[in-house]
Length: 468
Image (cartoon, rainbow, N blue to C red; front, side):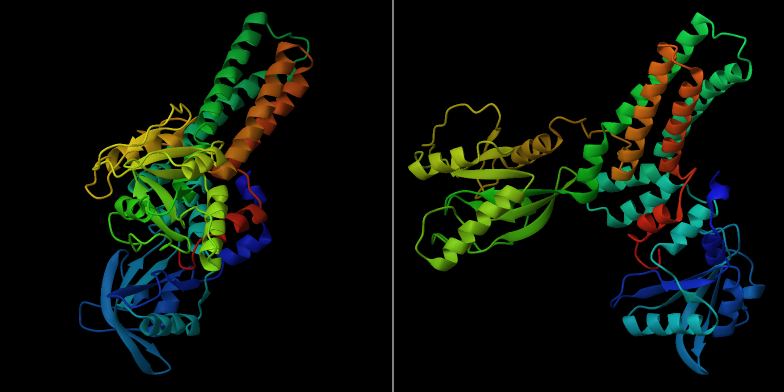
């Protein structure tokens, strides 16, 4: 089915030879320009001059060899480079591929790319190398998405999950589910072809059990969607509280370095400060806010309004209280104001004698910390992780976390498989059962790219950087 859906435009694109800079722009030790396509070796021949007896032109070079030489553009030497040759199908794209390592820096990399384009390649579109790897069968669609997840990983846990997906862990689960439903559908279609033979009760029950197991397995995958969203996109946590309770100190403690200015003068923080921290393997964007209080200062008042806006837009809040002082009327107001938000109550200044007492709040964990000594910071990180994962699976040891596209496809597959089971159970008509099973199988196929459209590929690969 995949081959039947490949459009003429895709076939035409695969006939091109493409080139792009595959390393980040900016100064560095090395930059890499990648060329891939049917004319990759010929393009490289036109702009590469080998140096030394051990080097040769790319078209004569064996696969997986490296050659020293120079890149020439308009009869002018651009740079001395190392050129690696990867002959099809033993390359990332399964096409002839050349990777040119030149000196780092925007200008050398640009001129090497210009030389490749002048020699007959065209500039690659975002994600086009990975798109070709998918279309040529190197990766399925879920694995191709994992490439982007690896590039954008912000924590080791996110990287580990992305690597599992690239290795095919999700794809194997989806393929097994599809095979189970295909086997069930083949039994149903056999009875459609031979209508005089009714489905025996034991056969019907066996098919219902098989479909039921597939539905439950799909629901297990669906439960990982929230965690997948957190790992890929992170969560936002607003740090709020009265002035001088230690909000900026808490930001610095969670980051592990000084980011915010700390001062005993109330109202030092006038605007929000945003920084991302790796907390127990989870990317958490911390927002330090201005102290909440009534003030006649117009600038500080604007900061307080921004604090409330940050708290409203955050996924959860860290509400900081000064444990060395009795509860104030302002504390009570702000505790009530944010009572409906997901939050952690942070009792700061634990190194001083405790003066603060609060009635138990079972919906909000409380942690005593000292930003001065570091006491309780690790316990706070545990509490933050628990709040993020509340109501979902534990992330510990999780190998698969689906993304929003997978979630949508799996939901449709569950609905169709449930309809198939219901029609089979009620003996409404095996034709309807077969049709619903086909819908479920196709929906699962979208996850790994068994069936796809140009628009779907455009949507996925447009999120990649050029050169990947």
